[in-house]
Structures are given as C-alpha cells and as structure tokens.
Image (cartoon, rainbow, N blue to C red):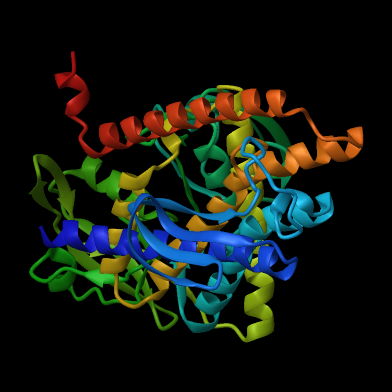
Amino acid sequence: MESFLIAVVAMAVVLGVMILVHEFGHYAAAKWFGVRVDVFSIGFGKRLAGFRRGDTDYRISALPLGGYVKMAGENPLESRSGAPDEFMSHPRWQRFVIAVAGPAMNILLAVALLTGVFMVHYEHPLYLDEPAVVGWVVDNSPAAKAGIEQGDRIIRIDGQQDPTWEDVFLKIMINTKQPVSVAIQRGHDMIEKQIQPEAEGSDEYGSVGFLPDQPVIVTGVESNMPAAKAGLQIGDEVIAVNGTPVRSLYSVIHYLQQNGDQPVVVVASRHGQHVTFNMTPVQTDDNGRKAYRLGFGSVPVHVDKLPFAKALSRSLEENKKYSLLMVDLIHKMVERKVSIKQLDGPIGIARASGDAARQPGWTPLLGLMAMISLNLGILNLLPIPILDGGIIMLLIVESVMRRDISLRIKERIYQTAFVFLVLFFVVVIYNDLMKALPGLAQRLP
C-alpha cells in the first residue's frame, strides 16, 4: 500500500510539473501578444478548485491527465467576434509562437533539469560511456547466432559510427521487428553483420545477448558467503577464475554454473598487486532459480559532478540524443517495425515515478522528470491536429496557401484527430494494464 501511495504521489508531482510548465508556455506567449486567456487549467473536466484574476480562471479540474489553456477565439469551430484580443485575430506568426511555446518550455525544462542533475550528482554505469567492446556473448543468443565474439568492437550500428555502449543499447532496444546492421572490428579486420534482436519483457524492448567488456570491480560483498569468508573486498578487481581471464561479471557467473560446487581459485588485483583466493561456490535458491554463487557483485558506476558550462553542454548532448531516439522510435512505430508496447501510459509513468522516488536523493526523480518532459515536448510537436504540432502544421499550410482553410475542412480534420487520439489513448492504457497485470491477458475472453 505504501509503494502504491508513493507511486501515485510521485506521478502527480511529475505530471503536475510537466503540465504546469507546458501550459505556462502557451499562457505566457499568449499574454505577451495580447491574447485573452479565459481558462488556465491543470486537468480536464469538472472544475474542482481555483480562482479568477483578471480575465482568466485559474483552476484545477477533475481528470489530472493533462491540462489546457483556453484562449478567446482559439477554437476555429466556435463563433468569433473579431475582437483584437482573440487568438484568431492575431497574425499567423504570433499564433505559431503561441503554439510552439508549450513544447519549447518542456524541452527547456528537460535541459535545465539534467543540467542541475549533472552539477549535483548523476550516477550511471561506467560502461555506458565506453567504446562498445564485447566482453561476453550469451550462448544461442541473436549475437551468438550472428557470429559476434568476445573482444569484438562495434564500430557502427544502424548507421551510427563509433557508438558507446549507451548508443548500442538504445539502438537495439527500439529494433525488435527488423535486423540491425552492425560493423565490428576483429583484430585488423572489419566485418559486417546483421543481428535480429529478440523482444523481451512486457515492454518488448530489443535484446541481442552480448554484454560490455568491463573490469569486474567488486562493488558489494555478501556476509557469510564464500567471497566474504575468503577475504575478497570492495574495490578488488577480479581478473581470473581458475586461470581463465574474465572481462564481464556474466562470464564469472557462467563459469560458476559450469563448474558447479567444485572449488575455484580467484585472482584479483588490489592496489596494483595480485591477490589469490580459494573459494567453494554455494548453491542458492532465489524464487525457484537455483544458481552457484560466490556472493559478490560488480556494478561499477561513474559519478558526474560538473561545473555549470560542462553540465549544460552534456545536458544538451543528452537531450539531443534522446530527441533523435524518440523521433526514430515514432517513425519505426508508424512503419510497424516497433511494438506500441514500448510506450508507457499513466500506469507506467506512475510505476517509474514511484521507483525513482524511492531511491535516495532527488536526482533519480529529477532525471526521470527531464526525460518525461522531453518526451512530452516531442510528442506535442507531432503533426496531429488538436496537438500543438497539428496547429503548427495547419498554420504552415495556411501560410503557403496564403488563405485560411475552410471551417468545414477544419471541422473534419479535428473530428478525425479527436477519434484517433481517443483510440490511441485507449490502446496505451490497455498496454499499461497488460504490463502491470501480466496474468490479466490470460483471464480475458
């Protein structure tokens, strides 16, 4: 129950801030150009609370899944008086600025939040920033079937040159219905490969079964387990097991499963010197999954605490990267090359918000807010009528035509767009429920 309440409160905070910032962008631009704002609402539907100041009713409404700014004369289907403070009475370029101001504020918020995170404390796996050198290939995985080997360096994936591991995983993640072209360097040779990712989990993110080459630095030791009893310490770097060099934690795990309960000799580096440990793996049972273990973990992380200029520069790079990824994902979704299950709705956002809120410190939640704000800004720029991008598209078409589109055509466009958005929202909610309640699909008729 406590986890549920944390998730609900965290989602309310995250979405509330996103919506407030977005609508404030429209509101501020409208006020700047002298457009009368009748309503500034957080949420849709029945008015629950609020106050009136000047011409504007500032309110909180019953359905907290969005918000809106209602400007005088904004709806082309409603009658207009032609007053100078009406939206449609203003030049198209001013209406364009008002429409784009909302998404622009969300994108600016994403940049500002990530800048703040990078200045304070941003923690992420060390390998994400490293060149994509393969440290382990899972047996019978798509990577193994494609002929990828330990030590191969990925020098191009899906058209992107010299990717980091973060780039590689993002490209793999959004490609589940088509092969991904990969160029690898093996020694002095460059080899072209095609890998078909497999969809994994309820989100159906792509996976190919290779893992990064990275040092196995001990970041955790379990008490009363063989590693702790033998004297392995946090900070030690495991370099070999029974004489076999290891460059991935998974290679250690794989070796232990093959070795069973036989003793192993672990060689580690401590302060530049080799230290040898004799251990005997023990079999553990975690929710029915039996495995031989030594009792240490390795998740090396990198902590960024950058000055403002570098934090801003990195934030701009990250937001650019994820913006292009979002556009690529939408493009592939339209072409039916990616499952719509990769999109999260309110339930998915609540789950992610709750997870971030339960982590120590504010930076995980702020980082999540930055990503959601960026996604909201990009999605609102899609050329779908009713969304800001649709209004922008119609304004551009009218500017090229040098005349307004007829009200009858606009009415049909908005009706079609409304039906599309309702159906899209229903599909997203349905997928949310299927992911949150995996057994529900089997119980439905």
